[in-house]
Image (cartoon, rainbow, N blue to C red; front, side, top):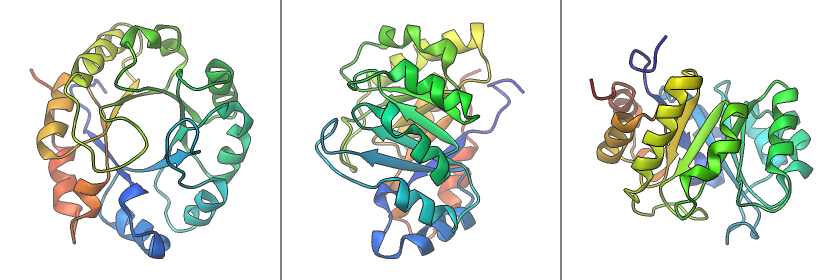
Length: 225
């Protein structure tokens, strides 16, 4: 199936879920029709916030069958790849800006049969991705500064999406191109028109009593003809 024919995937970010009842939130998310669950892992060093680790992912894995899209915003991610795979990650995304060996981490992820992802921050030039693209199953373009939810969308990310889309059309049409940060109905539609296939969003979805109708709208977004 070509990019133009595929339905947009929604990866709802549990960073905006109610952590006091996370198991129930996972069940609500799956029932809503979200394609994936986006899980932000932060270590307090690569980004100025600390979230969750493999033990929490292992616990919520029992509550939902949907793919877990795990975004590692951590230094030296290669140290923890096996832990996150055992916990139940279906995609693991690392950053070239992080200390350590991102390429080695991606190889480790791929060798385990898990989707390997690479992500760049808003201030990073998109050409940095060039040496990672042919090893990636997923590219995640950050359209906010990573670390905290609820920020406003940074429009310059759209050009990065277009850059990756062009490469994917020429080399790997199955590449998932995800966008995370300030995603709502308006910005999500812009991202899909630019070439994104996955929309990661937290507050715009979890803030709704019933996120199902909004998710269906987003899944219906399509690229420009």
